[in-house]
Image 1 (cartoon, rainbow, N blue to C red):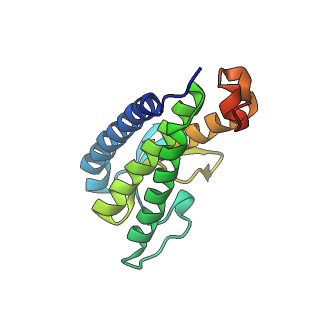
Image 2: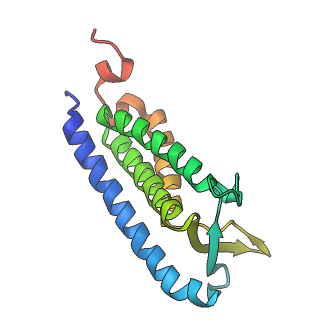
Amino acid sequence: MTVSPKRNLTAGGLLALLVVLADQVTKEWALATLFRDGALVEVTPFFNLVAVWNRGVSFGLLASDNPMTPYYLSGFAIAVVIGLLVWLARAPSQLLRISLGLVIGGAIGNVIDRLRYNAVVDFIDWHAFGYHWPAFNLADSAISVGVVFLLFDSFLGDSQGSDPQISKGNGE
């Protein structure tokens, strides 16, 4: 089986586009409802919808009021996306293409927020026994699921249907 960079980019790119669209639609909904009044909506005893501006990266790390921070973080994310696109073009397995599409779409969704609002729109809040997971959004979820799938793919290796010549990096 030969890896088709065009096919890989198309498949992964379509998934990334779906993630970006779903992410932006849900964030627009959150902005129009939750952020308007600073609302907290208790959905279940362990799940809320909240209005949070994340000025950093995962879990608010690297948060700063420096006006250049969103641009630094966006530039870094775009560089990572470019690297992931190169990897996607060479992806030998379907699971790897899905994984990379999810991560790319999530990263782009959050870059859009940083460039539009100088922060990322977060609104999903899981909690139990008084402990709250940091608020997140659909893009963050796609990145997390994509990384888990990347780990699965790394453990499955050739058994997942990849081309052994490509995955070993030689033509023998």
